[in-house]
Image 1 (cartoon, one colour):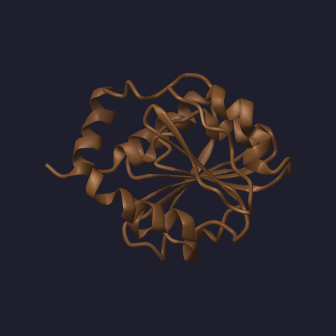
Image 2 (image 1 turned 45 degrees about the vertical axis):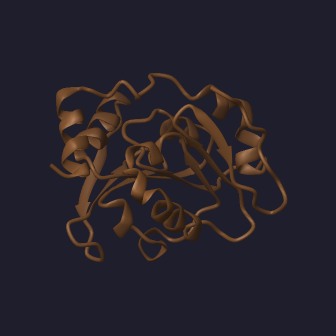
Length: 181
């Protein structure tokens, strides 16, 4: 069983203890550092699952793009948030689909993380990563940082949280404060 099958099975069996039913406290405390205090920016959330952080960002007026390879997680997100959505196949991404909210600025791509590029969705102003790299096999961690860093406009902030330790990427001379678990 490969990694994607393992995670797909976890979603199907409801073994998603990593999911939180509330907006991440650290995100709330540091939203202005992530966004530069701006409204209406493009935020990328890799391997988003059914994180309610997506809706929170949209409620603040941001344009939110999630990426998840498990369609069960995406459908569950939209259903639990009581959002109508449309699903369409992606012509420029083999086997990829996109789920778009009909009433919020939220879209979630369903595809392989390593096949997703800025040519598909453009570049972003910020990346919010709570646990995405925890879902990748350790041998893929370095490979995963490269696609994320290439998806962000030069000079903008990339905030990343991995597992229980909060790490920081420094861009444009700013750094978010670190917090332990």
